[in-house]
Image (tube, rainbow, N blue to C red; front, side, top):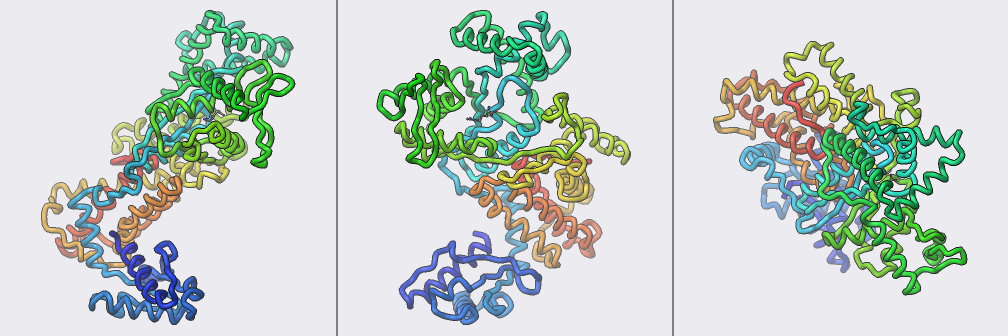
Length: 584
Ligand code: ARG
């Protein structure tokens, strides 16, 4: 157990001894930890205000009583310098030497196992993310979705959950038929290979073309609807065309996933799940859960839940977006009975998921209570930056290309091509680091602007800044190779200056930060911690010479600290999908 939790438990225990007098209990969660604003105020502070009512005593008085008890209980080891009161606060000052030894030696001996947390051991969590439609390529919104889903999955797995990453490809419906129609009428049998265009962009081009077409050609929409009916009827030519174009889109998207480090364990396709959804709706209708309206459509009445009526099947019997989601959820639970299914989907679909979850419960699926919509906000570019052909949507591939080119210019202008080795590959990794960090450092529910230039800055709260710390530490450790300092006995207790201490405390905090990020499914918690770690390392590096420290023992201890920072940095960067760089 880390020091923080140890003290928290002790304080809860002592408080309960006090409150037992009045026949009340105080839970662990009632005990709040604060970080004092100044180092001389110790390492943790515990405010006692909240207990005043229960204990019928002034907070100052409680603080004094608690401090006294703590000192008694710690059998001499808790002297005035480690437990003291500041008005209504009980403050704790840790033993720097002891904590440095525990953390540094712990990581040297056990590597990242030192941070082992298993808060989600035995839990099966399915995470759905990305989930594109097959009429156009991935855009900036998907990039936020993808990195959120991938990062959350990695964070949950790091807490020992069994995670399955899934994607639903919405591959049927009128929008798909629109790009099919434009291609059918004007495509002349061309294909992505013959034109040299990335296959998903190629299909997206035909969707744009349809929208232009339909402005002049009033019959275009009608012909697209006819195509949908043909598809639903299983017309061979239509189904073949549909299959060919969907393969183009999906294979192009998979290239983008590969590029950004996103992957899935299972892809679901709406064309495979929507009929199951339709069957469930009809079953529900039979059971009297839904009603058939005068116009022939099937609807669910949600007025008892303070919501509207919802159409589940159109009057012509065709399926809607929600119809397939019934089937998709049921098939997923059949495939892999989960303890929780998380849908990473934009906040504009909040109502959709609210209705979906209520109706699945109404249909009698007990696991409906385990469904969760992780809603995230919009992401836009600042006005005037990198707009795609249509002028509104920012294409994912183009954006990453642009970031990569900007990073490459930077590498060249700093004349670092030789040092980094493969400049193009390094630029690509910097681009992804910049993009992913920028998108994750904001809490999911908030809308945001993505500023490409700012994201790439090497100093500031950015991905490249974190990558740069990694490269810097790598180079220090590299220099050490000749000296082999790391072979001797490490006296971590020598690490006691303020900047060493702050760094050690930040490292020690990693498990609780990770657990919080997992509990709230919020990677921004981890992103902020990474920034703090890098800032604290930077400060340490300025104030404490490593390879030229006064004594060999101190050199060795500081090198060991560098190794610990690198180990934890490396692990945490991976959880937020930032590529690690040895040099940059
Ligand atoms: N393809 C949908 C869209 O682009 C998102 C799918 C979200 N997932 C779901 N199970 N409905 O809006």
